[in-house]
Image (tube, rainbow, N blue to C red; front, side, top):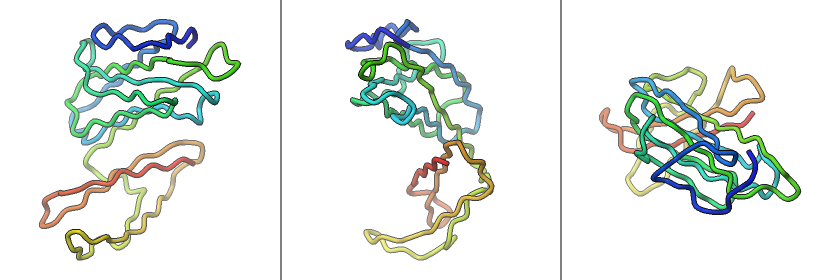
Length: 169
């Protein structure tokens, strides 16, 4: 992408331009959690992008992230199945850069375990308002990728909290 606008993204009329990339992601039925993200580590220092997520083919904005860097993230809990259009708008290029490739990363989690994350202890009694510790161990993950997991805490089979974990290998 090039020619950063330095101005606000037109949220009511999103479109791909030379400084805005459009990505379309299909979210299957049964997805419990979706994350769309960009990372500072993937771009020149000083690059600033913003992210806008729409229901596919519409102007219905479902999430946005507009921080002052290229580290942007939109999370959707229990998203409806279908397509989503992700617009990444370049607000500013890093010093000395004239163009920048921006990678949109996405993770779509179902409700079934992938069996590559172990949690110990698997169960434990807890007290409301007190902290509890768990140990997580990832296995069988190829290097050179980013991974996402979502832990769900429940009591009497009723979920009441979640923790999202990321791993960069």
